[in-house]
Image (cartoon, rainbow, N blue to C red; front, top):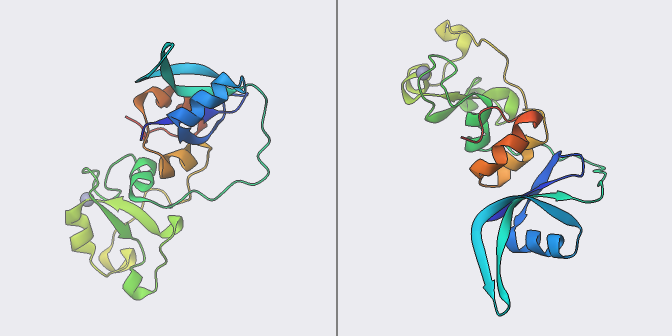
Length: 171
Ligand SMILES: [Zn+2]
């Protein structure tokens, strides 16, 4: 089902809702349409284009920020879609400290890798194989990441997500 990106009154990305839910927010004047989607809704009185991006009229304070969900898509986005070891296109998730050696499945221990590097590294540590990471893996920061981890990004969202940390996530 197509989704709509919801921005706070300050343009900070908040999350995604269904296009129909977004339309209701607009019709109730709780939000304004920033970008139209491709979906046109027909009704007895005519037709209306559903929104791709809406902005809330009133600022909403978010008391608690959820951790960014660790997904394959969000991880590849964090690492620019490239293998961190050889820069080939990423096709797999590598655990820096192998899971078989007690490595955790968390943002600090996962990197994007190509199949070749992942296979070559196998269940060895970087020290054992003599490889180095250019940057330490971290949980990505920025509101846009919550959206990348959950919704299917629409290309029309990119302008609104980029200032909030999503460099590579939406193409
Ligand atoms: Zn590689």
